[in-house]
Image (cartoon, rainbow, N blue to C red; front, side):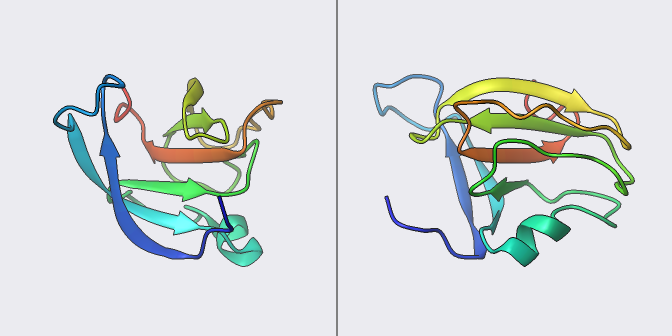
Length: 109
């Protein structure tokens, strides 16, 4: 898998590996450059869909206005862990995580 570029796309969520109908299709913002990953969701009052930070193994919510759900993903984009983080927190990095997906709190329930 090559390097990702900053931009927009769609996140297609499937609940099983059979490749059947997707469970959800969510607007996705990709932050792959250092500058885009550093800014992330800072200064926003809401999240439209989700943001993928790549590469990343951990995040913080210092300077954020809203709580977020954080999913740590491995190199195959499989979920390792999901946490809800209020503003002003430092999330511990996950050793196997290669990407981080952020969305509004409660979106990943």
